[in-house]
Amino acid sequence: MNNTLKLFNWKRCIAFSVFTLLLLVVFNFYGLYTNKFYFFKFDNYIFPVLVGVHLIYLYVLRFKIKEQEFTDPQMRNLEYALYGIFLVYIFKLMDTIYILLSYGKYQDHIMPDTFLPIGLTILGLQIFLLFLTLIAIKHRVKSIGSYAFDNINENIDSWS
Image (cartoon, rainbow, N blue to C red; front, side):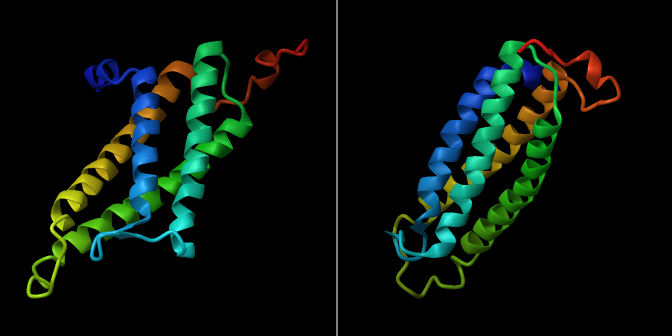
């Protein structure tokens, strides 16, 4: 795990996470079966909202590490929300696997040539995002600390 944290230091982790999130937001509007983008489906806008929460967490993580600040209840709540979003990411991963496995079932129908390449790209990005999310949480624990609020009065800067 230490080698992984060295390879994906917190700066690289945040940069790769932002890049992966933005790519997945674009692919969220893409229909694998039809090879078209769907911008007018309400369901396609749920994922970008959740990505917004993830981006806020990454910003807070970057800020806390750069300023060498301690954790606070707001960051804890944001991370707990990220745990729920992580479950949505797992659901999206399973949905993509289900769609890709249905390729053999619909092989007699006209499938776009981009079905497997784009589908496998999306699958790889989703797996990479799950990995980066876990690495970001590990960096929070290592660099910022745990959520121990017993000594909260010692960590408050009352002059700011």
